[in-house]
Length: 186
Ligand SMILES: CC(C)(COP(=O)(O)OP(=O)(O)OC[C@H]1O[C@@H](n2cnc3c(N)ncnc32)[C@H](O)[C@@H]1OP(=O)(O)O)[C@@H](O)C(=O)NCCC(=O)NCCS
Image (cartoon, rainbow, N blue to C red; front, side, top):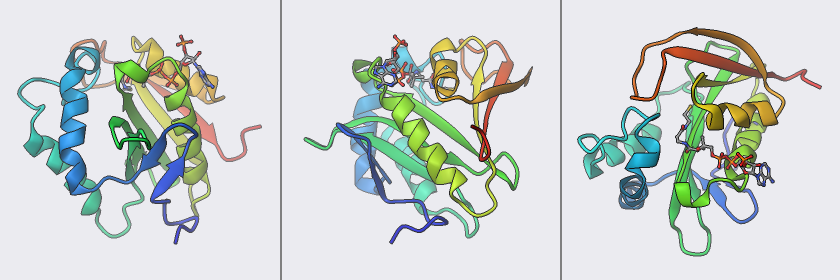
């Protein structure tokens, strides 16, 4: 049963669902990422021919299944409920301090431009802020990644700061924006 401190297994976004992954999803994930390496490669460090393997996708799912006690993170797949096709991934990362959670995301190019990820991030921000002790949700993206930054901007996040960060993907500039939504935001 979902409680405020236990993220839901599934979230219906209308037309697509967010669902926690199972190991059997690794093939579907790989199919989605393989079809979109050109779209994902500029921004996602793992979206390279070398790292885009079934083994890595399985490890990605396994990491969610094996979360250590107290890790408040949660991975979700964006899934087409009509046929189970994997259309992307999003999730909460427990790596921005005790009172915050970060949201990360990518979407298959064939379903961009429809507001799916904006709705997904809104839903996960709500899940995060409902948790005991979480007062802040962050989106971190390179300042050159305008499509990514448009999502927190659209949702009323505030650009709190821009800082130097390690470049991990080819289109990144190394300047990372920190977008923040707080529990008391209007
Ligand atoms: C970042 C990424 C997920 C953004 O995808 P996206 O399709 O722009 O985002 P959304 O699904 O929220 O769709 C927003 C678009 O749908 C439109 N839209 C349609 N209906 C909408 C609705 N009900 N609500 C919000 N937006 C809506 C918006 O106007 C916007 O289109 P526009 O950019 O032409 O104005 C995608 O570009 C991606 O996967 N990029 C590669 C990986 C990546 O960069 N990840 C982030 C790393 S920080």
